[in-house]
Picture 1 (cartoon, one colour):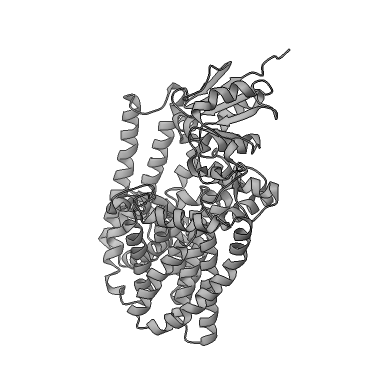
Picture 2: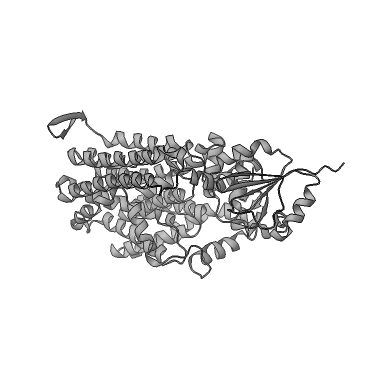
Amino acid sequence: MMQNPLVIGDVNLTFPKINLAVTIPLFFVLLYLLPLGLRDLWSPDELRHAEIAREMVQSGDWIVPRFNNIRYFEKPIMGHWMNATSQVLFGENNFSVRVASAMSTLGSALCLFLLIRHFYTNTHALVTAAIFLSLFLVTNLGTYSLVDSMLNFWLTAAFCSFYFASQSTATSKRLLSYSLAGLFCSFALLTKGFIALALPVIVVVPFMIWQQKLKQIIGWGLWVIVIAALFTLPWALAIHRAEPDFWHYFFWIEHIQRFATDEAQHHAPFWYYLPYLLLASLPWLFLVPSAVKHLSHQWKQPLIRYALLWALLPLIFFSAANGKIVTYILPCMPPLAILLSFGLIHAIEKKAPGVYLGSIANAITLTFIPIVILVLYYAGALPVNVNESHRPWLLALVCFYWAILALISIKVSSLDSKISCYMVMPLGIFMLAWAIIPDISTHSKMPAQFMAQIKPLINDQTLLIADNPDTMSAYNWYLKRQDVYLSHSKGELKYGLNYKDAQHRYIHPEGLTDFILQHQQTHRIAFFSRSRTQPKGLPKADNIIRKGRYQLFLYHKLNTL
């Protein structure tokens, strides 16, 4: 009863029985928590979120987000609060910058577990959580400092609350569930804005129509709006009092222009998300056909219908928007996990050929990839130098590990064992990512090493200039400075730099030479650039330090004696 036989050829190996209730927590610790501090922070996203939270803690102002002591209105406050709280608890380090995303992902998995266990079985709940936590998009964003994982947590909690409410017959339970839905919608709004209100509407209303419960959602929907407003209002009023222009910028520019107008960022065609959806569903992609086939008899179940709408309608919504970013489809992952789990449990129990064939395809693909990697490496076609010969081999090792697990999943018989094999497939690449990332990425997107090199050359009196917010954030975080001047690109600080008290922080390239020569009289100057060439308007430097794409131009203080 407690053994799980694995037969390979004529050899019969016996392992202790796998239990998802044990392997899921271990998997979360190994993939989501232990590696968080191993990788250097990526620019621009992680450094930006780290610095905004650091300045919030340092200043004691938990109302107005600031970046380099300049107003930053790109996002509301909840994500910054969560990141700042992490820094209060764990200090200023890589782990604290990312742990809020990791714990938010765990929160989403817990919501799914509670939802499925309540309406179905413990097995369905555990398999759903296992699939969700190992989806490639979820693991990537759950170990990276972005507000998307936090938003996904609040939205998942809201969607689960709405479903609980829709299935409740007692008024008291409906009241509790709809109240929780309003609370979580409020927190989602405070994390990323009004999109948090749009997604539940486009999913829940069609579902209630499908279930012939439209009157219920109309009546209780007003209650949800009231609760959401009550919990949003304190900060909404506080930010309006401190910065009256915030809501104008955040609503019209960050929402209307980003999603609907020709000024939207990241233009892409309607089908943009489809290839990314395939990557997002790894390692379960190979089992999707079998899972879909074995869902065919389950479509009449309310939860399956709900999950289908939850997955498809936000995807269509984001596909129709002019501005597209891969992270936007993260809210589609929880319902995808539900659909996959229900399909796969039935397929595995029926010993469906599709599960076997999918695992074979998985193993062949992940065996072929490392062979291609090594061939490309020895052909000189990979962007690695002679000191990085271990990186292609490590990546190949990770792929072979994945392929071996696919083969083991064929041999093991229990549901928990098969699901566990697939769940831990991404473990290798995330635990070894810090050792696999090539120097070309480290020296263009991860400035920690370069900042450690130049830090001895800079003191508190050095005047700092950066050529864009990316390099500026490296100055901010690693040197603990928030008085950096900006030149060339304003980036996401364009709006904040328009305020009168911040306009002097930007130096136009045409005036850069005069600015440096003038301030050389009283300061040493360090200009940090990520440009492949010398930035426009920069005078000849006394010293230049380069590493990859990073360049530091040093100007000594002039001797005025």
